[in-house]
Length: 640
Image 1 (tube, rainbow, N blue to C red):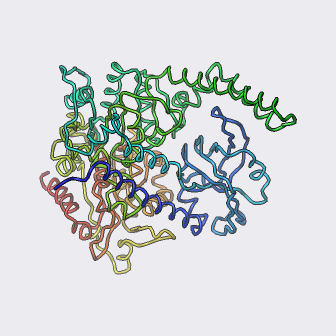
Image 2: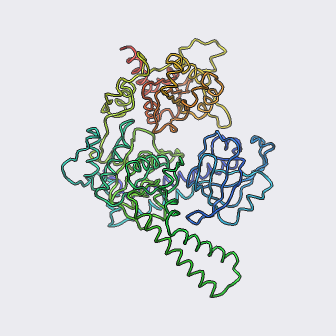
Image 3: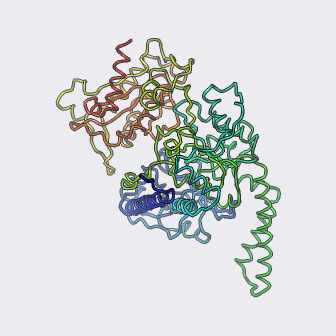
């Protein structure tokens, strides 16, 4: 049977991406037209009301306006650098969002160019400031449909498809076939500060001519290994490109590289704004250049000339053209200096499509979080490089795909997964984990990693207190309840979003945590800063749990040590204690998207020393994975 050609498979990817694009665009349209303002604000997709601040030109010569949100500051939001936004005004009596009427959108869009807590700087087209400042109703801001990211991904797929006789065409054909990837041969280098599987992985990366996959299960020191591999690559190459799917992941790896003394240029702004990382951003480096004041003066003169424009005719155009040439010359010189002084260019995958990088070629691109990135997004930086190193874990969170049709068609299959399937010899698995008690790790190792993981001796038997059970499943179906209480322990739909909650389970979650804290001792928890993560796959349950914690006086001294979030919100994080509220409890054994086992792998591997799972066993154990997990936990307990 003949396999489809790389071109045919890429065209299929493009078609699926088009389906996803249409679905997301339509969802955004409905979201804008029908969703109430209160819900947009609580979902973190809108700020309202805003205080409009000063305007200025940034170092990229974009006209910017500062805005501050003046209410709902405790709600996590989804705004970050590069995301498109749109301003609106609304009538909301006494700022009661539920009563908001007549939302009217301004007819221009902006881009978030800096976000720090409740303050945002938005790049907007010139000439709209007065509209925002002099409006008769309070102004708000919401996320806009992200057309740009799709455009960059479509462009990348088209370039890869069209490539002929180039390095890009070679990599495309290699990735889609079983043809072996080329390698160098040399004696293994020693890195005594790394464990054996990490040392092997760094050597594998250095020997790879075309591609390598660094497979890092939870807690195995993937970032440490990746930083070492980048550092060693820089002994052989002048500059490398380092990318990841999310801004947070780019920040994380950039910070680690900076800590090793490697000069990094961050394209785009960090999500957690701190002085250390801000000084490595392109905008900061550009504005810090000695020639920048001269460029700023030239740009200002040009703006004033256009504004006054008293003179016309040839003389005006000649003068403007001369200034334009001078501005371009200065920009080119500053850019050459800024890029010439660094060893690592770091950006998101979509950010690697930035025109700033046009003309730049790299020996190697490192793609972190590669198992969470759409294939189209990975091709954006790959077309600038000769070889690719993927790092990630395809047994953890997959890419986000909103269209069911696109998901069924295979849009969720990543380029990293493709290479793991087609070229298992290109995979380096990290095998020693430094996070979890051995009992917490073992199930995940057996189920997802063919039993190949092992615990570092220093964490294998670590406990919060003597005789503690590292892993427990509390079966809520075993609680004796009166008739009037039973419904409280069944899942139910709440709110406009029809989110799922299980109120009985949520209250029980906090009661169990309270009992556990009392057993460990208040002072010990505060002194040792024992931190807790409460995870639920359902956003509505997360919100409900957050409200309950605020109400319970017992937790007041510990609130800074407790975080509540969805599985996605805990990706890449760890806590001493993790409690998972599974929510689902029904007579049909329906568990919805809890069938996505990679999500559960993330949830159960966040815990260092204690893992509580709360779930209705009769509902959950109809699925073979949860049956195995439940049986494993019972077996471990019986052996004690």
